[in-house]
Length: 300
Image (tube, rainbow, N blue to C red; front, side, top):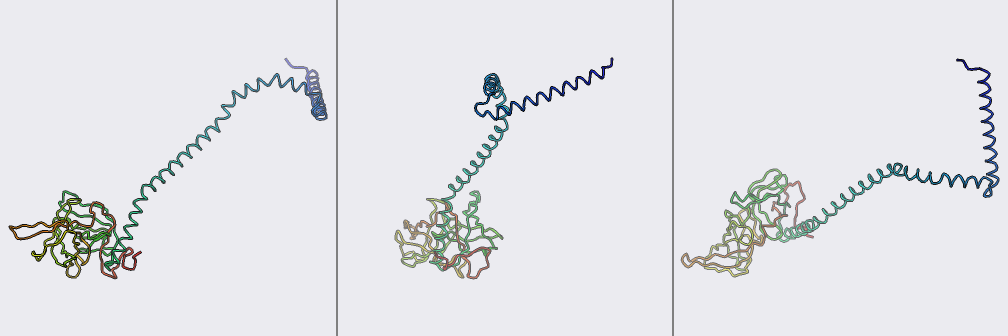
């Protein structure tokens, strides 16, 4: 069934007239509201509409608010997680600094003391750190240091620290070296009693700690050292493996053997072999090294 064209045109005219009328009414209301200010004649109508629609708007806002806040919630949660991770990292860094403060302080003090030892003895030293201790299964007392031939370290060199004699270099690689401690049972060091200048031989007991003493057998058995006498290195020919004048320890007791008509002095070493860290390897002056050498002029 076809619609009447005249009827369709009349409907379009009516719709346009209605639209124009609504536009005129809107323009009139806007003008009246603008000119009226706070005394606008539309204020009662606005109030009435607000009272009628206000509860519905509040209810709608309450329902919509959780959904509209979801992006902010995710943003806040991500920001908090980032802040938490940053604070954890900062806390770990501060804890590490606190834990290493004492180590750094001790190492600085040891370096200063080693520089003074170089000044007192006049020797040139290659500074090195102990990085490993020989296994107890080997029945030898050795340590590994982080300096080798690149640093000028070779076999049969004297090793000392700020307290006294540590041992001698057994062998060296390009970057490390093995040091035989003077407390090793196979170690023999020429020693001299400082008070009497008598010489003898120091032998290790093979122990570390309170039992890690040295035995001193003097060449002249008629001489009796006294408790508290200091013992230093006698020195080897050509200064290898031991240079002279390095402090070793002090006499704690003298043991006599009437049957053998001999006596043996027990020496307490100055070095604490249970806490070795920074040591110095005595090298000839002018040695080529990949690190800064410590000499008498470095005493601070």
